[in-house]
Amino acid sequence: MDKKVELRLAKIPYIGFMAVHYWFVVHDVHRCDRWEVWQNRDRGGKSWGHLHQNLMGVYQGVGNGDSWQEYLWQGKTAHRLMRVIENSYDHYPHCYLYRYFPGPNSNTYVAWVLNQAQINYSLSIKGIGKDY
Image (cartoon, rainbow, N blue to C red; front, side):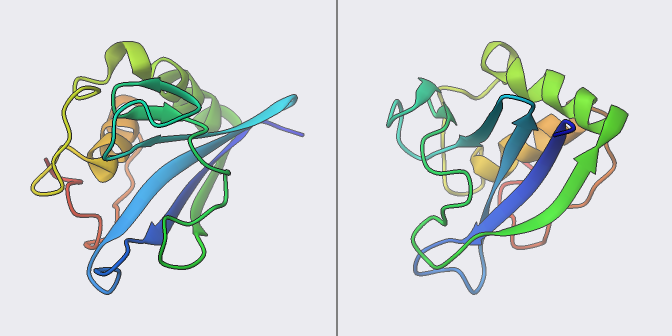
């Protein structure tokens, strides 16, 4: 399998009509990992405060139905993203701070990764916290 990075999202419980939760799924030859910021610290998988690797199944929703893929990067772009994501525990400035609104939250993390990897991609308006 070639290296690729998926951008996934799911509706947030109770407010899914207006808010979504974004995360990345990193696919490599020997593994598939989910990377996201979660509202609770150290909830499972590997974690660095609110930043989690494999807290839940890669395609599992967040309590309001299934998740879906919004975008898929491959090739050199995926490699750039992977480098940022896999080192984010050491560089993401908000690992130990979480606020639903205005952020930082899961969508802040995804926007930060995209910015660090110099990828011009616009998250949904429902990605509250993306502009934090």
